[in-house]
Length: 520
Image (cartoon, rainbow, N blue to C red; front, side, top):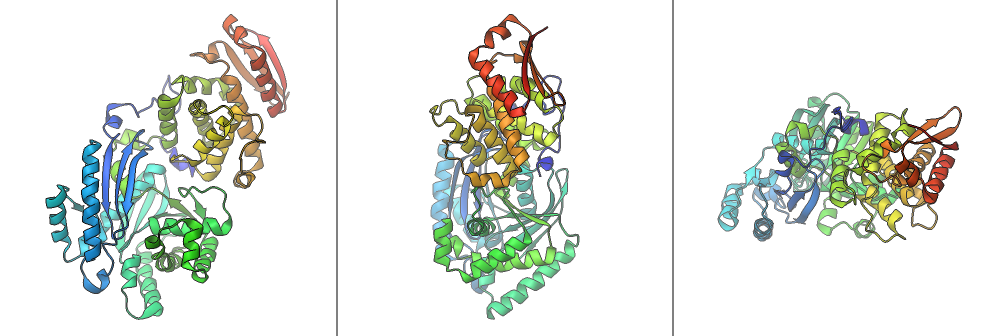
């Protein structure tokens, strides 16, 4: 999936294949404090985005599980208790947004408010009480926005996205190249299903009928199914626990259809309180999981995807994506985010680009997917310098594997984390590194990550604006020789005792003989 993230690679004479950074441009700065209030059928949430707009940081993120859509199937109206709780939450969110000087602030409502008999009355009450003007999106628009949220993380993603809320479920096609195809909505939200009469048999028949109707509109089997929404994420957490999965990052978590069926069977036979304790899921969310499981079981059976991926990005991120210029939309989210992290946190902002040029000769034959990770590691190599030296390697690893970064598979997260760990520490022994994480990465990539870490560790010894002016690396794989050419007196002065030891360690990791020569 990495290749999908790097759909548009530009060439710039000074900046190389990723182009000059855009996060500091006026169009990106205009998006650096965007607020979204999302009024869903189950939750009401305020998110404020900040930072590198292409891969935004969550400056503020708070939700209240109000249950606006609870009981809708029986009454056709919003839950009275949900309305009261939502109004209190929206008063708070409006005050917070004003205090944070959020602009723009977008307020949207989905299935419950658009379908409820008292939806217009609720909107008017909210505006009178808070000044917030709620935009109600229809089902197709909700599907499109959720698809755009997925594109925020994977600009070139292809497949089918499925966004489940409290009262509805949406599907949208991702055509590749940032294009969105057909968008559809359905009444397969858990809160709606709870109100159906006739018990489980009637519910399953209803789900089957609706899913067959949807499948007729999306007849081509998707290579990949992207799941968006809190109920899907809760099921994914349970799947992680059942499998003993070592990396607790939901975004880009992968499941096979077989694993999904096994997890749904596990949910059916396990006490809800036990599942809550295992996963830390709220009671209100866990109450919806059995219903959502029935939908997911039929969804996978009907559409038969090869693979299922969890997206933590959805409608809120889709609204941010909506405002981005095309030039920003098609940038690699990983590279933009790591550049931004370097510009804010590194001791020598901008050195990562020069460091990449210094170590790149070791990865001449690497594929673009690997080279972007090399580039990302160079940008991040110094951002954790404030951490205590005894824990810096672990902090680097944790930052890479747990940070809110789009455009990376879990295997790539571990690869990047290992490279940064070895940038500060020659061995993983003595750290809290979980060896189970190595199961996510092929053994050859573990070795390559260590080589990258040692290369960056050595390259950092040439902490000059243009290290390639003073030294150059060249690897001769057939001869098994790693050659360092020292070009200037400054380069020779920098190649002291510690630098020499690091150069020898890099050669050892490559299985090569270390050679140093003077040259132009």
